[in-house]
Length: 336
Image (tube, rainbow, N blue to C red; front, side, top):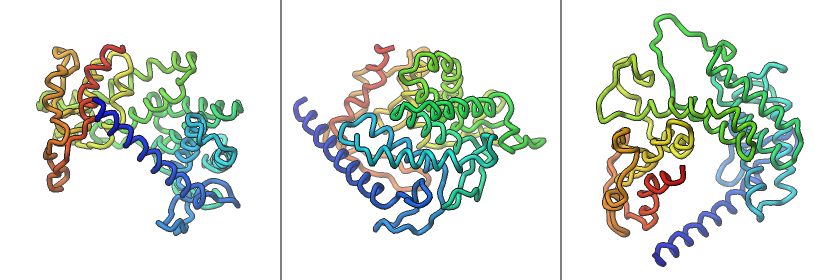
């Protein structure tokens, strides 16, 4: 156990050093002092090779600066907060294509003119995250007003009327539902509801709805559900595999409503990442701890991970922290 603690501490220190290095790079090279916002197309030497500004990345950088400022003492620096505010003001001035409308651009010129608009909700999602975090660190109410109003608009587009996105439903198009939409909405539910009981209550039902939509993308015992029952299937009735996205949201999914059994699906102790062997209600949504430990392997043991998308298999050495990850699904069950 002591050796495991030492290993985890070493990784914590390494990650901290990498974070400091990354932050120093972006603080030095990405700030647009003339127009506000951030350059995000940077070479390894920090030189800007394209000055287009992507609203997703503008919102993410504002959120990250504010989040680090709020959570970590060593990042509580005035210049970091001022840079975040400058990025937020750039978004307020330029992100929306036709104010007072809420639709945001996907790409902007350096001085904030729209270049491309996507017919999705994701620019608006990152805009919302940025505004909410700015409110948390500054206390300035207009940021929170922007966040809540944009959240209401996103929910309207997703659950009531998507016409404002400019994406008409074409006759004969098969019903489908990408996982990205409920995944991002659930992220916003958690973001806006943090330490805010009123908003958390307002969005509780939405969080449950998102969790249920996400769980529809979990394969059921290797059996192929009928297309009528599963809107995430392709036209041939086959599932649409996407290993990265599902790994981002299991813990959020597990915190909402009837999705609590999903907590046990948050980690695949045999191969890592998202669940490979689904757990039905009869299993209580959990893997027995002894089985999880056995399947996780022993520290130092070599395991072979199957390749994805035609890539070759990969050999890995099982780190000690896999014991913690492998049994996470059983341990978290007691916290609900």
